[in-house]
Length: 268
Length: 156
Image (cartoon, rainbow over the protein chains, first blue to last red):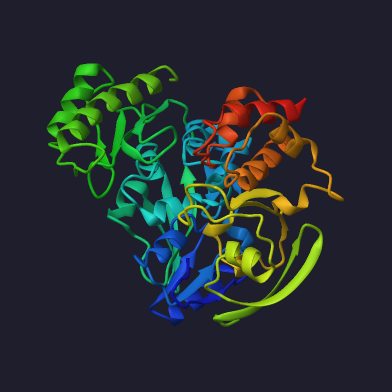
Protein backbone atom coordinates (compact mmCIF):
# COMPACT_ATOMS: atom_id res chain seq x y z
CA UNK A 1 0.00 0.00 0.00
CA UNK A 2 1.19 3.51 -0.73
CA UNK A 3 1.66 5.59 2.38
CA UNK A 4 1.23 9.33 2.50
CA UNK A 5 4.54 11.10 1.95
CA UNK A 6 6.65 11.13 5.07
CA UNK A 7 10.12 12.19 6.12
CA UNK A 8 12.43 9.81 7.91
CA UNK A 9 15.43 10.03 10.20
CA UNK A 10 17.31 7.38 12.14
CA UNK A 11 19.21 9.15 14.93
CA UNK A 12 21.87 7.42 17.00
CA UNK A 13 21.15 9.00 20.38
CA UNK A 14 18.19 9.88 22.60
CA UNK A 15 19.21 13.55 22.55
CA UNK A 16 19.19 13.62 18.75
CA UNK A 17 15.83 11.83 18.67
CA UNK A 18 14.37 14.38 21.10
CA UNK A 19 15.65 17.23 18.96
CA UNK A 20 14.03 15.73 15.84
CA UNK A 21 10.76 15.05 17.68
CA UNK A 22 10.73 18.59 19.08
CA UNK A 23 11.49 20.21 15.71
CA UNK A 24 8.18 19.28 14.11
CA UNK A 25 4.68 18.96 15.61
CA UNK A 26 3.93 16.18 13.14
CA UNK A 27 6.92 14.06 14.15
CA UNK A 28 6.40 10.65 15.70
CA UNK A 29 8.72 8.06 17.13
CA UNK A 30 8.91 4.83 15.13
CA UNK A 31 9.71 1.80 17.31
CA UNK A 32 9.05 -1.65 15.83
CA UNK A 33 6.38 -0.29 13.52
CA UNK A 34 4.06 -3.27 13.95
CA UNK A 35 1.19 -0.92 14.78
CA UNK A 36 2.31 2.41 13.36
CA UNK A 37 3.06 1.26 9.80
CA UNK A 38 -0.37 -0.35 9.61
CA UNK A 39 -2.26 2.66 10.92
CA UNK A 40 -0.31 4.78 8.43
CA UNK A 41 -1.58 2.51 5.65
CA UNK A 42 -5.13 3.06 6.87
CA UNK A 43 -4.28 6.78 7.21
CA UNK A 44 -5.57 6.61 10.75
CA UNK A 45 -2.25 8.27 11.56
CA UNK A 46 -0.32 10.45 9.12
CA UNK A 47 2.85 11.66 10.74
CA UNK A 48 4.93 14.17 8.79
CA UNK A 49 8.20 12.86 10.16
CA UNK A 50 9.16 9.43 11.44
CA UNK A 51 11.99 9.31 13.95
CA UNK A 52 13.23 5.72 13.83
CA UNK A 53 14.64 4.65 17.21
CA UNK A 54 16.29 1.48 15.85
CA UNK A 55 19.89 2.71 16.07
CA UNK A 56 19.73 4.01 19.64
CA UNK A 57 21.60 1.29 21.49
CA UNK A 58 20.78 2.61 24.95
CA UNK A 59 17.08 1.94 24.31
CA UNK A 60 17.68 -1.79 23.93
CA UNK A 61 18.49 -4.46 26.40
CA UNK A 62 17.43 -6.09 29.64
CA UNK A 63 19.40 -5.73 32.85
CA UNK A 64 18.79 -7.47 36.12
CA UNK A 65 19.77 -5.27 39.08
CA UNK A 66 21.22 -6.62 42.32
CA UNK A 67 17.86 -6.04 44.07
CA UNK A 68 16.05 -8.09 41.42
CA UNK A 69 14.62 -5.11 39.53
CA UNK A 70 14.55 -5.54 35.77
CA UNK A 71 15.49 -2.56 33.64
CA UNK A 72 14.09 -2.98 30.15
CA UNK A 73 14.91 -0.64 27.29
CA UNK A 74 11.83 0.63 25.45
CA UNK A 75 13.09 -0.77 22.11
CA UNK A 76 13.48 -4.30 23.49
CA UNK A 77 11.42 -6.65 21.33
CA UNK A 78 8.98 -9.29 22.55
CA UNK A 79 11.36 -11.93 21.15
CA UNK A 80 14.23 -10.38 23.16
CA UNK A 81 12.13 -10.74 26.32
CA UNK A 82 11.13 -14.31 25.49
CA UNK A 83 14.74 -15.33 24.89
CA UNK A 84 16.29 -13.43 27.78
CA UNK A 85 17.70 -15.27 30.78
CA UNK A 86 17.48 -12.05 32.84
CA UNK A 87 13.80 -11.53 32.00
CA UNK A 88 13.03 -14.92 33.55
CA UNK A 89 13.43 -13.16 36.89
CA UNK A 90 9.79 -12.13 36.27
CA UNK A 91 8.54 -15.13 34.26
CA UNK A 92 5.15 -13.66 33.39
CA UNK A 93 6.85 -11.14 31.08
CA UNK A 94 8.14 -13.75 28.64
CA UNK A 95 4.97 -15.82 28.94
CA UNK A 96 2.74 -12.92 27.95
CA UNK A 97 5.09 -11.69 25.20
CA UNK A 98 4.90 -15.19 23.73
CA UNK A 99 1.11 -14.79 23.38
CA UNK A 100 1.36 -11.65 21.25
CA UNK A 101 0.48 -12.18 17.58
CA UNK A 102 3.09 -14.30 15.77
CA UNK A 103 6.85 -14.82 15.34
CA UNK A 104 7.26 -12.03 12.80
CA UNK A 105 5.46 -9.47 14.93
CA UNK A 106 7.25 -10.60 18.09
CA UNK A 107 10.60 -10.15 16.30
CA UNK A 108 9.90 -6.48 15.51
CA UNK A 109 7.32 -5.34 18.06
CA UNK A 110 8.73 -3.64 21.15
CA UNK A 111 7.79 -3.27 24.81
CA UNK A 112 7.83 0.51 24.45
CA UNK A 113 5.75 0.48 21.29
CA UNK A 114 3.15 -1.78 22.87
CA UNK A 115 2.62 0.48 25.88
CA UNK A 116 2.95 3.80 24.03
CA UNK A 117 0.37 2.81 21.41
CA UNK A 118 -1.93 1.94 24.35
CA UNK A 119 -4.51 0.16 22.28
CA UNK A 120 -6.98 -0.98 24.97
CA UNK A 121 -6.71 -4.57 23.68
CA UNK A 122 -2.91 -4.72 24.06
CA UNK A 123 -1.42 -7.25 26.45
CA UNK A 124 1.26 -5.23 28.19
CA UNK A 125 -0.67 -2.26 29.63
CA UNK A 126 -2.70 -4.37 32.11
CA UNK A 127 0.30 -6.60 32.81
CA UNK A 128 2.62 -3.71 33.66
CA UNK A 129 -0.06 -2.06 35.81
CA UNK A 130 -0.65 -5.29 37.76
CA UNK A 131 3.02 -5.98 38.41
CA UNK A 132 3.72 -2.38 39.41
CA UNK A 133 6.16 -1.38 36.67
CA UNK A 134 7.57 2.14 36.45
CA UNK A 135 8.25 4.01 33.22
CA UNK A 136 11.03 6.49 32.55
CA UNK A 137 10.08 9.34 30.23
CA UNK A 138 12.68 11.71 28.83
CA UNK A 139 12.05 15.13 27.32
CA UNK A 140 13.98 18.31 26.59
CA UNK A 141 13.53 19.29 30.23
CA UNK A 142 14.94 16.11 31.68
CA UNK A 143 13.75 12.79 32.92
CA UNK A 144 10.79 11.69 35.04
CA UNK A 145 9.48 8.47 36.42
CA UNK A 146 5.80 7.49 36.11
CA UNK A 147 4.16 4.43 37.71
CA UNK A 148 2.39 2.24 35.14
CA UNK A 149 -1.00 2.92 36.77
CA UNK A 150 -0.59 6.64 35.99
CA UNK A 151 1.04 6.10 32.59
CA UNK A 152 -2.05 5.11 30.60
CA UNK A 153 -4.33 8.13 30.12
CA UNK A 154 -6.79 7.20 27.39
CA UNK A 155 -7.25 5.23 24.18
CA UNK A 156 -3.92 5.61 22.33
CA UNK A 157 -2.86 8.20 24.92
CA UNK A 158 -0.16 7.95 27.56
CA UNK A 159 1.85 10.18 29.86
CA UNK A 160 4.48 10.49 27.11
CA UNK A 161 3.83 14.01 25.86
CA UNK A 162 4.69 15.63 22.51
CA UNK A 163 8.43 15.70 21.98
CA UNK A 164 9.03 13.14 24.72
CA UNK A 165 10.25 9.54 24.64
CA UNK A 166 9.65 6.52 26.82
CA UNK A 167 13.15 5.17 27.40
CA UNK A 168 12.95 2.48 30.08
CA UNK A 169 10.55 0.23 31.91
CA UNK A 170 11.47 -0.89 35.42
CA UNK A 171 9.86 -4.10 36.69
CA UNK A 172 10.16 -4.94 40.40
CA UNK A 173 11.06 -8.50 41.45
CA UNK A 174 8.30 -11.06 41.92
CA UNK A 175 6.95 -14.39 40.76
CA UNK A 176 3.35 -14.57 41.96
CA UNK A 177 1.78 -13.38 38.73
CA UNK A 178 -1.00 -14.57 36.45
CA UNK A 179 -2.41 -13.59 33.08
CA UNK A 180 -5.62 -14.83 31.52
CA UNK A 181 -7.31 -13.79 28.31
CA UNK A 182 -9.91 -14.77 25.76
CA UNK A 183 -8.37 -13.85 22.41
CA UNK A 184 -9.80 -13.93 18.90
CA UNK A 185 -7.99 -17.06 17.75
CA UNK A 186 -4.89 -18.38 19.45
CA UNK A 187 -2.54 -15.50 20.33
CA UNK A 188 -4.91 -13.09 18.60
CA UNK A 189 -6.33 -9.77 19.72
CA UNK A 190 -7.76 -9.99 23.22
CA UNK A 191 -11.51 -9.70 23.82
CA UNK A 192 -10.77 -9.32 27.53
CA UNK A 193 -7.51 -9.86 29.39
CA UNK A 194 -6.66 -9.76 33.06
CA UNK A 195 -3.29 -9.63 34.79
CA UNK A 196 -2.90 -10.41 38.48
CA UNK A 197 -0.06 -10.09 40.93
CA UNK A 198 -0.04 -11.36 44.48
CA UNK A 199 3.51 -10.32 45.33
CA UNK A 200 3.12 -6.96 46.96
CA UNK A 201 0.88 -7.90 49.91
CA UNK A 202 -2.62 -6.99 48.72
CA UNK A 203 -3.52 -8.55 45.36
CA UNK A 204 -3.40 -6.29 42.32
CA UNK A 205 -5.62 -7.00 39.33
CA UNK A 206 -5.60 -5.08 36.07
CA UNK A 207 -8.36 -5.69 33.54
CA UNK A 208 -7.76 -4.83 29.89
CA UNK A 209 -10.13 -4.29 26.94
CA UNK A 210 -13.02 -3.08 29.13
CA UNK A 211 -12.18 0.63 29.35
CA UNK A 212 -9.88 3.21 27.75
CA UNK A 213 -7.12 2.25 30.17
CA UNK A 214 -6.44 -0.85 32.29
CA UNK A 215 -8.78 -1.00 35.28
CA UNK A 216 -6.74 -1.52 38.45
CA UNK A 217 -8.50 -3.36 41.27
CA UNK A 218 -7.23 -4.27 44.72
CA UNK A 219 -9.42 -7.05 46.12
CA UNK A 220 -9.28 -7.56 49.91
CA UNK A 221 -7.82 -11.01 49.40
CA UNK A 222 -7.07 -13.58 46.72
CA UNK A 223 -10.18 -15.59 47.69
CA UNK A 224 -12.69 -16.15 44.88
CA UNK A 225 -15.44 -14.19 46.64
CA UNK A 226 -13.20 -11.20 47.20
CA UNK A 227 -12.04 -11.21 43.58
CA UNK A 228 -15.61 -11.47 42.27
CA UNK A 229 -16.75 -8.69 44.58
CA UNK A 230 -13.92 -6.42 43.43
CA UNK A 231 -14.75 -6.92 39.74
CA UNK A 232 -18.49 -6.39 40.34
CA UNK A 233 -17.99 -3.27 42.40
CA UNK A 234 -15.92 -1.76 39.58
CA UNK A 235 -19.20 -1.36 37.63
CA UNK A 236 -17.41 -1.98 34.36
CA UNK A 237 -18.96 -0.43 31.28
CA UNK A 238 -17.07 -2.24 28.51
CA UNK A 239 -17.47 -1.54 24.80
CA UNK A 240 -19.34 -3.99 22.57
CA UNK A 241 -18.49 -5.07 19.05
CA UNK A 242 -18.92 -7.95 16.63
CA UNK A 243 -16.78 -10.20 18.85
CA UNK A 244 -18.50 -9.68 22.19
CA UNK A 245 -21.38 -7.81 23.80
CA UNK A 246 -20.74 -5.52 26.75
CA UNK A 247 -22.44 -8.08 29.02
CA UNK A 248 -20.20 -10.86 27.78
CA UNK A 249 -17.09 -8.73 28.34
CA UNK A 250 -18.30 -8.02 31.90
CA UNK A 251 -18.77 -11.75 32.41
CA UNK A 252 -15.32 -12.51 31.00
CA UNK A 253 -13.72 -9.90 33.23
CA UNK A 254 -14.93 -11.78 36.30
CA UNK A 255 -14.04 -15.25 35.02
CA UNK A 256 -10.61 -14.22 33.75
CA UNK A 257 -9.88 -12.35 36.99
CA UNK A 258 -10.45 -15.61 38.88
CA UNK A 259 -8.22 -17.51 36.43
CA UNK A 260 -5.42 -14.94 36.60
CA UNK A 261 -5.53 -14.90 40.40
CA UNK A 262 -5.57 -18.71 40.55
CA UNK A 263 -2.49 -18.85 38.30
CA UNK A 264 -0.74 -16.23 40.42
CA UNK A 265 -1.67 -18.04 43.65
CA UNK A 266 -0.09 -21.22 42.32
CA UNK A 267 3.22 -19.41 42.02
CA UNK A 268 3.57 -17.53 45.28
CA UNK B 1 20.99 14.78 10.95
CA UNK B 2 17.81 15.92 9.24
CA UNK B 3 14.74 13.97 8.25
CA UNK B 4 14.48 13.29 4.53
CA UNK B 5 11.66 12.14 2.27
CA UNK B 6 14.01 10.32 -0.11
CA UNK B 7 17.14 8.41 0.66
CA UNK B 8 19.76 6.19 -0.94
CA UNK B 9 19.86 2.83 0.78
CA UNK B 10 22.16 -0.17 0.49
CA UNK B 11 20.89 -3.66 1.16
CA UNK B 12 22.27 -7.11 0.57
CA UNK B 13 19.65 -9.44 -0.83
CA UNK B 14 20.45 -13.14 -1.17
CA UNK B 15 24.14 -12.28 -1.19
CA UNK B 16 23.96 -9.52 -3.78
CA UNK B 17 24.46 -5.83 -2.90
CA UNK B 18 21.91 -3.31 -4.16
CA UNK B 19 21.99 0.47 -3.89
CA UNK B 20 18.82 2.36 -4.70
CA UNK B 21 17.24 5.71 -4.01
CA UNK B 22 13.81 5.25 -2.44
CA UNK B 23 10.99 7.32 -1.01
CA UNK B 24 10.85 7.14 2.78
CA UNK B 25 7.24 6.04 2.48
CA UNK B 26 8.06 2.98 0.37
CA UNK B 27 7.29 -0.34 2.04
CA UNK B 28 10.07 -2.92 2.06
CA UNK B 29 7.93 -5.43 0.16
CA UNK B 30 7.41 -2.93 -2.70
CA UNK B 31 11.14 -2.23 -2.74
CA UNK B 32 11.90 -5.95 -2.99
CA UNK B 33 9.26 -6.70 -5.62
CA UNK B 34 9.16 -3.57 -7.74
CA UNK B 35 12.61 -1.98 -7.38
CA UNK B 36 14.67 -5.17 -7.24
CA UNK B 37 12.26 -7.24 -9.36
CA UNK B 38 12.36 -10.11 -6.87
CA UNK B 39 8.71 -11.09 -7.11
CA UNK B 40 8.94 -14.34 -5.15
CA UNK B 41 7.85 -12.60 -1.96
CA UNK B 42 4.12 -11.99 -2.20
CA UNK B 43 1.71 -9.35 -0.98
CA UNK B 44 -1.36 -11.08 0.38
CA UNK B 45 -3.23 -8.87 2.79
CA UNK B 46 -0.94 -5.83 3.08
CA UNK B 47 -2.08 -5.52 6.70
CA UNK B 48 0.47 -7.70 8.47
CA UNK B 49 -1.87 -10.64 8.94
CA UNK B 50 -1.11 -13.17 6.20
CA UNK B 51 2.70 -13.47 6.22
CA UNK B 52 3.06 -14.01 2.45
CA UNK B 53 5.64 -11.18 2.43
CA UNK B 54 7.84 -12.77 5.13
CA UNK B 55 11.58 -12.40 4.62
CA UNK B 56 14.64 -12.77 6.82
CA UNK B 57 16.19 -9.46 7.84
CA UNK B 58 19.67 -9.96 9.31
CA UNK B 59 18.56 -13.51 10.03
CA UNK B 60 15.32 -12.49 11.75
CA UNK B 61 11.92 -13.34 10.31
CA UNK B 62 9.85 -10.23 9.56
CA UNK B 63 6.83 -9.23 7.51
CA UNK B 64 8.17 -6.93 4.82
CA UNK B 65 4.81 -5.13 4.41
CA UNK B 66 5.15 -3.82 7.97
CA UNK B 67 8.48 -2.14 7.41
CA UNK B 68 9.73 0.75 5.36
CA UNK B 69 12.53 0.11 2.89
CA UNK B 70 14.59 2.85 4.57
CA UNK B 71 14.43 0.87 7.83
CA UNK B 72 16.30 -1.92 6.07
CA UNK B 73 19.20 0.32 5.03
CA UNK B 74 22.42 -1.57 5.74
CA UNK B 75 20.67 -4.88 6.36
CA UNK B 76 21.07 -8.31 4.84
CA UNK B 77 17.83 -9.73 3.48
CA UNK B 78 17.02 -13.29 2.48
CA UNK B 79 14.02 -13.97 0.27
CA UNK B 80 12.56 -17.15 -1.18
CA UNK B 81 14.71 -16.69 -4.31
CA UNK B 82 17.77 -17.38 -2.17
CA UNK B 83 16.70 -20.87 -1.13
CA UNK B 84 17.33 -22.85 -4.32
CA UNK B 85 20.83 -22.98 -5.71
CA UNK B 86 21.71 -23.56 -9.36
CA UNK B 87 18.14 -24.50 -10.16
CA UNK B 88 18.03 -27.18 -7.47
CA UNK B 89 15.38 -26.93 -4.79
CA UNK B 90 16.76 -27.07 -1.27
CA UNK B 91 15.64 -29.79 1.13
CA UNK B 92 12.80 -27.74 2.58
CA UNK B 93 11.44 -26.76 -0.83
CA UNK B 94 11.68 -30.37 -2.02
CA UNK B 95 9.81 -31.50 1.11
CA UNK B 96 7.01 -29.01 0.36
CA UNK B 97 6.75 -30.50 -3.13
CA UNK B 98 6.91 -34.12 -1.93
CA UNK B 99 4.26 -33.60 0.76
CA UNK B 100 1.82 -31.56 -1.34
CA UNK B 101 2.32 -28.67 1.07
CA UNK B 102 0.96 -26.18 -1.45
CA UNK B 103 -2.03 -25.90 -3.68
CA UNK B 104 -2.35 -22.38 -5.08
CA UNK B 105 1.15 -21.56 -3.82
CA UNK B 106 0.44 -17.99 -2.85
CA UNK B 107 1.44 -18.42 0.80
CA UNK B 108 4.40 -20.68 -0.02
CA UNK B 109 7.22 -18.10 -0.16
CA UNK B 110 6.28 -16.84 3.29
CA UNK B 111 5.78 -20.35 4.65
CA UNK B 112 9.22 -21.36 3.38
CA UNK B 113 10.88 -18.37 5.02
CA UNK B 114 9.11 -19.01 8.34
CA UNK B 115 10.11 -22.67 8.18
CA UNK B 116 13.68 -21.67 7.30
CA UNK B 117 13.83 -19.40 10.35
CA UNK B 118 12.44 -22.16 12.57
CA UNK B 119 14.79 -24.89 11.34
CA UNK B 120 17.87 -22.69 11.78
CA UNK B 121 16.97 -22.21 15.42
CA UNK B 122 15.58 -25.65 16.13
CA UNK B 123 16.69 -28.57 13.98
CA UNK B 124 14.11 -31.02 15.35
CA UNK B 125 10.95 -29.08 16.19
CA UNK B 126 7.86 -30.74 17.65
CA UNK B 127 4.55 -30.45 15.82
CA UNK B 128 3.48 -27.80 18.33
CA UNK B 129 6.66 -25.80 17.73
CA UNK B 130 6.13 -26.00 13.97
CA UNK B 131 2.55 -24.78 14.29
CA UNK B 132 3.63 -21.91 16.54
CA UNK B 133 6.38 -21.00 14.04
CA UNK B 134 3.97 -20.68 11.11
CA UNK B 135 1.24 -18.96 13.10
CA UNK B 136 1.95 -15.71 11.26
CA UNK B 137 1.42 -17.33 7.87
CA UNK B 138 -2.07 -17.92 6.57
CA UNK B 139 -2.81 -20.68 4.04
CA UNK B 140 -6.36 -20.90 2.73
CA UNK B 141 -5.91 -24.09 0.69
CA UNK B 142 -4.15 -26.85 2.54
CA UNK B 143 -5.51 -26.81 6.06
CA UNK B 144 -1.85 -26.73 7.15
CA UNK B 145 -1.51 -30.49 7.75
CA UNK B 146 0.75 -31.10 4.75
CA UNK B 147 2.77 -27.97 5.46
CA UNK B 148 3.46 -29.24 8.96
CA UNK B 149 4.34 -32.68 7.53
CA UNK B 150 6.73 -31.12 5.02
CA UNK B 151 8.53 -29.08 7.67
CA UNK B 152 8.77 -32.18 9.87
CA UNK B 153 10.24 -34.15 6.97
CA UNK B 154 12.72 -31.38 6.12
CA UNK B 155 13.90 -31.37 9.72
CA UNK B 156 14.91 -35.03 9.53
